Image (cartoon, rainbow over all chains, first blue to last red; front, top):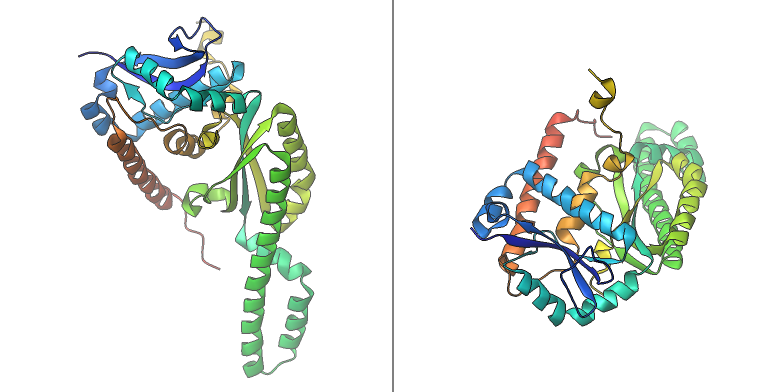
Length: 251
Length: 72
């Protein structure tokens, strides 16, 4: 079987490391076997989680390695070509878009930021700090059983309302900070609660395009907000630097 | 036996990212290529479908292996 060509990303053609190049753009690619990435083979392999994990991690590592040295436009997993010629054709036909992205990514990194909350710890914090809830508690303790039932229901509703308000306030505060800080922000869907596992419920999920200095400011912000957020049962997680996967659509 | 051989090099980079974050980016983000490819757009979409199925099965696996927290 003829080999295939797996394209990881595109970079500017300044280096001898990436000889497949045209008009200022170079391909970060690798020859792969049709037994691995051929049309029939890949559909079989995709059912194998170990295979997917291994290849996805390889894709990430390659782009990470190149990205540490120079700006790179990351491609989606499984961009496989029949020939080196067709990669060159791609560089030519979409050259303008790739160059504009490379200019945007020059000296920049992607960072991920997520906010999580622990429902029971957040509830405890609100119960301890909300005056309205304490007032209701006092009324409940002096009430008849019928009144207490209604007051408890009111307290439950109030707790829900305060929880929602607090989460939205924290979310807005962090989002405004990162929007101010970053060159570009991509708002992503919150992760599935079952995937975030022990971290709690994800209630903000953003990707940021920042310089090295801005990334340092992000780390400072994370440290400064740590104790306040922890008290409420909220955690702020950052990950990076990533190749700029999330910013390829608006070059 | 040389013990330094057995002790594999520790690489902090290895565990820098959560696998779910890597999968999310590498499979869902990045430039989408269409055109003269062995894998056309339909196949690229199929990769996503494949991943959705895979992620769903991971969820199930985690649910089964983790002790359930009682509901409040």
